[in-house]
Image: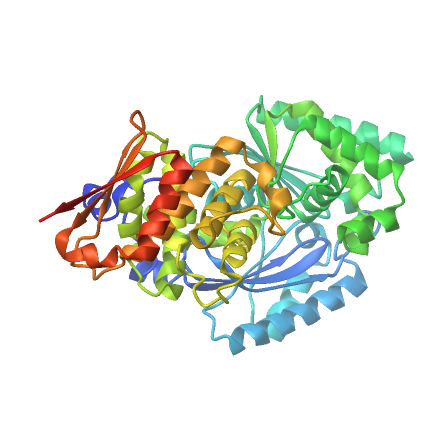
Length: 514
């Protein structure tokens, strides 16, 4: 997640130099991908910093191409017509956006159906798009690459469930290893004989084969796919979890069993409406629960992470040079936001150097969050002053940012809230603060107040600003200011310096030099 090239590191510190304005990264700044699945057909247009793209456009149509495939061997006729209409629409949208050529892939339903090749020919004839039917192992590889887009260097087992299949892939140190596909998609399970008892035996048998092929997998389990995300939504509802962001939501095997039982015990329609799950998806959730229960029982992962990234993000990752893949998606996204929205692009790095003496002994993972906060400290300046603090918190906790645990989102949001507000009590976010331990809440407050003070010393790039020195044993916070910059240390700046020292339980000292 860091750049070790000396030239790059010298310019940007341990996180390297920004690459989003490099020509190779800029070529990926807007990329369109179509994913024709067994259950849905989706167009995603990625835009922004290539390493951590924003979703410029995202449209999904539930076509159920794979419905009935197990009995007929053919694509669902109604779903086929709807999918073809969706492809026509998506092609016109892409033309209107002046996108480079779209990448379009089809998965289990199209590759398995007798009329899959005929459908692909219809798509090419009517839209000019080449629809690639990828095999199960390639689907597993692309889904795993989607995980690597958001979690560089991750270790674990990626499980992607679609309508007609379920794929597994292992990832180790940024690379995809063993891969396997199976017929454990919910639409396929509908055709298994013997009702629930027959399905249970079938799922157990297939899972044993998958375990033999993949070997022990005791690291993190990454869950990819709409059915898994629906189960996660219901788990959030069951727990009363306050942050409704699915990406990086964590579960464990106990939670899986409890939520599966919760789903069985409640009316599906009531649950669907309470959790915001579509009717088409909710119909598949009980079947997916049967698979997930057996999956965690078989592989016994240390923890479970829900991913919003999958095959579409994997297709984008496929186009990246390795030097771009190795970058930190959070830092790249924050740099892009600063370049686009801050009043003084580039000041975030100066601010990071200014506040860092307060955090000398924290690990690199925390410095990464501090860097991100400094890059984002001014991107919400257009918001009304009365609401800037809340806008900052909301943006940080709910934004589409990769490589962030939920607690890290709250840390980042809380630091940015304190960039504009001394106290955090009395906001509409109070229930989210408990996702962060009290010690880290305090660290976020110190960071926010340090940024709030540092922003008062804003000067030209070629003029040195003040320097902070923190003596934790003596509980003294010292400010060293250049004599020619002392005019910046006015009443408001002094009050903010005192507030920062108060959050550290420290006394203040000021030294003027030169």
